[in-house]
Amino acid sequence: MTASEWPPAPVGIDASRWVSRSGCRTALVVAHTIASCHRLLDVIEYIESDPRVQVVFTVAPDVFNQQVKRLLDRLGALVLPWHQAVREQFDLGIAAAHGGLHQLHAPLLLMAHGAGHGKRVRPRPDSGPVLADSPVYGLDAQRLTHDGRVLPTALALSHDREVEVLRRQCPEAAEAAVVVGDPCIDRLVASLPRRPDYRHGIGVGEQEELVVVSSTWGREGGFGRWPDLLPQLMAQLPPTRYRVAALLHPAIWDAHGHRQIRAWLRGCLDAGLLLPDPTENWRGPVVAADHVVGDHGSVTAYAAAVGRRTLLLPAPESEPATGTPQHLLATRAPRLDPRQPLLSQLALSRKVDPERVMAALTARPGNAGVLLRRTMYRLLGLAEPGRHQQTDPVPMPRPHHWATEHGLAS
Image (cartoon, rainbow, N blue to C red; front, top):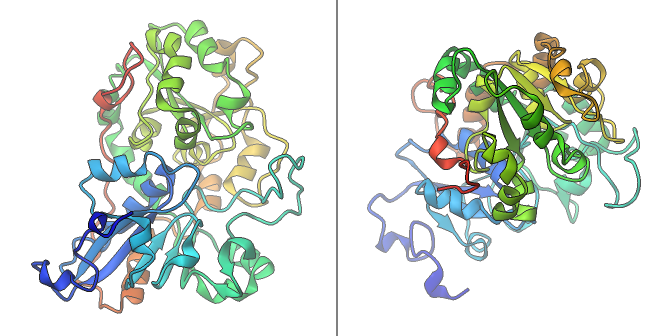
């Protein structure tokens, strides 16, 4: 990385020579993965229209960060190289993952990039099943501290339950905890009245039923554990009645490559599978869905919370943290057995206590935007301007950015 590759503005010792608007507070959005980037894009909207604030982005070190720059470029974001970002001072840093955070020079707002903190820590990749008393990932000292220093100035949590877990696992970080709820579920709820528009945007007819298949990454996720599920659904569900869409975690695409994923699913695509690019917003298809077939990932929990009829794939050996929406689904949702005929099982999908799942997901329903905005302005040292705007629905699906029947994407 040479100095000429570093943007000379809007931050840096010579930035005042080049900027047209001076005196702005600077906020650094630290994007590790596509999944964390989607969460951060929800949150940064609360401050980026403020003329007193300059927002810049950086791509942090992560195994699954290959496509983040492409997404940010498409959005027109100003992206600083990581080596520049860690050498500058910012008034606020915002992250939804953990890698490299100790290198930053900014008051840090840290949040989860999924449905709360439901996973437990696996000591090593091949160390066997995760134990029920293993630490909850993201609320442990290994993630939240470095050389005895607590990394987040503010740790945004979705539920009061997580504060108690934090006090047990990393008490030194408890003072940073701020229960704000979940901005993702708030936007999903705001999107529900526009369900017909999402269905029309995807191309689902009024008489068709949309089956959304969701998979998290890794060998325990649905795509890794049940590789024949999508081909079986395409073969067994009558195409005149059902449409099938696959929401694959962005890390699946990054680990195997976009061309390879489309090649593996070419037969399904030729049969009509809807396969959005991982940079596309996954929430529109969830709102549009009639059935969601999912694993232990966050998408299944969000879908159940907004009342989508759900079938849960066989659970992995590791048990979600008690009290989380993932744990609630694991104990209450009907199961789908990929080894048995699928059409008759699809009829068993049902709503899984949406109110209880919602209550497990967020302790501040509808208020995440207000509370996160308040927290960010506190860290920026600025007064909040005016009133908080209403939570917006998620963007309409853009099928021209999805895979086509020929296995390609624009």
